[in-house]
Image (tube, rainbow, N blue to C red; front, side):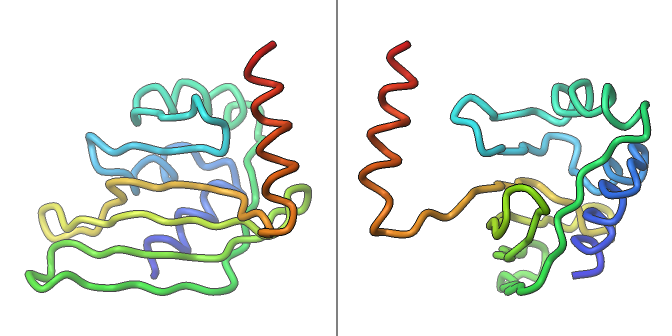
Amino acid sequence: AAVLDDFHKAAAQADEERYFSHFAEDAVFLGTDPDERWSVKAFRAYAHKHFSRGKGWTYEPSERSIVLGLDGRVAWFHEVVTHETYGRCRGTGTLIRERGVWKIAQYSLSLPLPNDRFKAIAADVRRAAQR
């Protein structure tokens, strides 16, 4: 939990070094856009443009569940994070223990959709993909 809390704080403070120190070397960040599957190197290149100008992003965690694997070296998590513009989002992922330190191996950020709005939104996404 401390790793995830500091991960979010570092992003909000545009602290690039601290933010990326929380990722495992071969980690993956999955963003909300269908094409956002970032290696750490690619994600850092993207984020550097923002962080170098003092612009981060703020996702406030409010709920979190972490399950520790039987070997104590892997953990899976789910968290509810809130963004000022996007509202309630979901973060899910995997943490691994590397040389005694917990690192994010995968983080996936998504925007949960209400079931009653899913068909209309899915149709809109299909139309946008056809452009």
